[in-house]
Length: 334
Ligand SMILES: NC(=O)c1ccc[n+]([C@@H]2O[C@H](COP(=O)([O-])OP(=O)(O)OC[C@H]3O[C@@H](n4cnc5c(N)ncnc54)[C@H](OP(=O)(O)O)[C@@H]3O)[C@@H](O)[C@H]2O)c1
Image 1: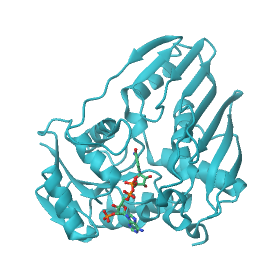
Image 2 (image 1 turned 90 degrees about the vertical axis):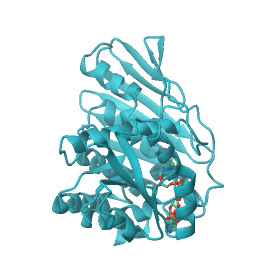
Image 3 (image 1 turned 30 degrees about the vertical axis):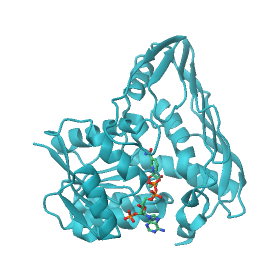
Image 4 (image 1 turned 180 degrees about the vertical axis):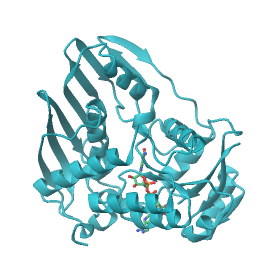
């Protein structure tokens, strides 16, 4: 039986996620409905992607009995209220990153998932790429020894994107793209809580961070250095230096198709999209969609590869980094 998806919003990433679903077998993944704040835009999206039903409100999608799981592709400050609305309607939810604006909001998401007994996952798509799974395997089997130092950066010019710079829209480098660097470090160190977090950064006039550097230390003298920027293009690579070698992810490290282990490069190609994409390598969103399907088939309420505890820790680290740099959202005082 196919997993029946509902798509919430007709924005940029919702387009790419819908295209990515089409790279998977139609007997396994189907998009049955889409909702936007505006019916006409929902209808246009439905026509473009061949989706049977279009709604002009998210509530109508929540009430569609045919939908198994909703993909929430709204802007960060709306992740909590919109996801909770779907979960209260007993829908499973895959919500875009960052999961919410702060750890308190993430806790509310988790409580809602448990109260409603539904599946919930933060759409940290990077974690489900074959490259990422191979990294976890290499580290678990200590094929290159123990990971000691992680260096990872993500910087792209986004100052022209309104939602990336305006505080009320959840702007800032950390929440938008720094989250990928931190999730990578936490994945390498297997979800361990950092012993220390040291952040420094520079902010825009809007009060959000333009760039940040975060150094994390972990037990057994292991550490990670993460750099993010929404002003300039960085090399966007990641390297894991281990006791018996190194693992390198060339750019784009957040949606990787290449892996270099002790200097030997392997390629993991992505399928071609059937329609134009807004973002790099977006057909790779298929891997998180498949993870959701596998969890639902097994009756799981969360993924062990990106668990709710993983999302909470990730957000707690971001909260602390923001506290040190002085980036405060209205949600922090609610
Ligand atoms: N995984 C990835 O690779 C990836 C890439 C890009 C973005 N993202 C994440 O996906 C989310 C959306 O990003 P995007 O680039 O797709 O954004 P976007 O196209 O600018 O907006 C997405 C949708 O959010 C809703 N929205 C926009 N402004 C709003 C406002 N002021 N008030 C209420 N709703 C508003 C709209 O929904 P309607 O269509 O219903 O009007 C819009 O279509 C972000 O949280 C981002 O972090 C993930």
